[in-house]
Image: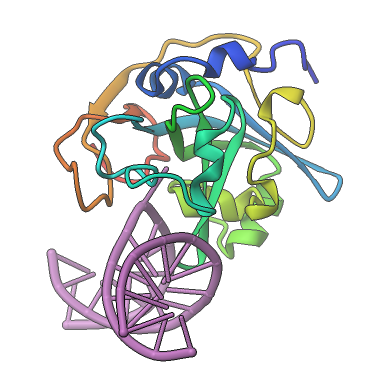
Length: 196
DNA sequence: CTACCGATTGACT
DNA sequence: GTCAATCGGTAGA
């Protein structure tokens, strides 16, 4: 496997809209129980440091959202109902912004993902933030994990870049700031959490 | 301690 | 489309 294209701290140390947009098409890796799980990112959402009432950091730092205030390139994993959600922290340290990974396309480890998800239906394995964390065995033990090390959990450039038709919509499920166009999708993907 | 509430999902009409 | 399971985080008494 090519670990020379692991996404660097500099990649994440930019504003969350740019990172969310550029993460489309990148690869998510998780080494778990001697299995390598790989997916291609097709849907993200940006959560801004300023003026974003939907962000967990909007009302200041708490034990849960501490990762958002930390260095870019680290994971922010939190529990949501029975599921977990995976974010990557963006911008400089102390600026609480992040990008939520909402959907990927399974590339490798599909058997394990199916078993963990309790379904064999390909488009239902990782087509949502909770679904992808369940399929990839991502939980809060990975909160604040440094994603730029190229081990355990990391992100990387694909070996060959492909053309991506991007779409931008309001974010899913938020109960405030519902108008902001901060959801980024690979429009042609069959694995989106919701139709465009 | 209690009460309220989701950046969700799956089941159901 | 609607609805509730389910549980950690948070605020408040």
